[in-house]
Length: 414
Image 1 (spheres, one colour):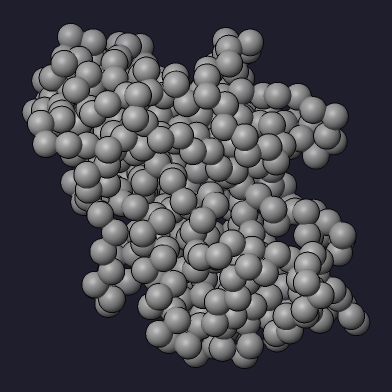
Image 2 (cartoon, helix red, strand yellow):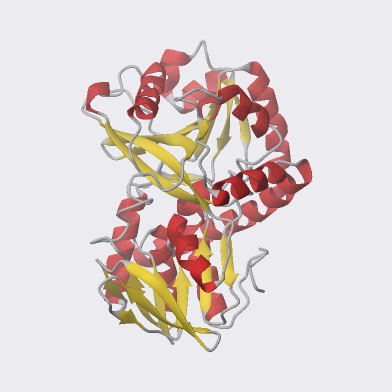
């Protein structure tokens, strides 16, 4: 079949890879001039298979209230006259109920595990390299209370097949010596040895090249104006220049922008942009920065060593489709990074970036069929797009090919 994949981020390109591998003729459409130039460009780098707890959990409302009015808070709601934002926010609060959190965590854990297996197989098949680090992810906690909560949560996550190891402060420093400067402040940590990190931008661009070698056509610089339908099916995708892209089946992988194209054809999905920030610090010989990927849980930050760079990302800002960089939030990330690692390069040279994560209220992505039999969804992965990308791509290729994915997940339209 002829397949049009809408979006060339990590989710769109992995979808194209698995679809082409299944024998389909694939065209990828994206408004940028290359793959992975928006949300995937400078994300936190973590492939956090172990991270099954969604942002919407019973403890979040209390934290959000505590953060109100703080411009540098980890999660910031900027209320707008936008009914979609209000609806998303109310749905988010509903998903904080314990039963909903448990159900969502089970779904997230399932796709995370499957996606990691697919990534390992892809790496073995292609030899693709992307500054990957395979020593796991270490979550660090500075308060005894937060560590105790993490230990309790780890026991629940193990029920989903996640390998987690609780570490003392000394064991954390032994695993990551760069933490020595904070030995007295760290209460302990949780190590997920099966997790990884790497440069998602590098991975996606290299995978796009491998896709092209398989015959995938990339239509860059093609901003999509609308989806056109006829007789209960999608008939084409119309670009801003008037060109029509026609295919047998279409895969929506435009991240945060997916709802804007779906609403005019009567499809509503619970996806809203959560703006995230990152900083990138160049490292020189003699700089002391972590080698293992870290999660600074109290500050909602993740840190990944990408060759001679340190990437630190995090925070969530509910502010619509605004992509402007808020320097206050970026400088808060810089400040916290150098509290942990005082010799991690030059703070004044940190590069700032912001991107829109396509978030669903409960953290479970929208994957599967729509009311139009030839329109599929692969969007809404939130902060876990890099983690879930290969599994999502493999699953959507199975669905398009008429197969049942080998994954216990609540696919849409199934």
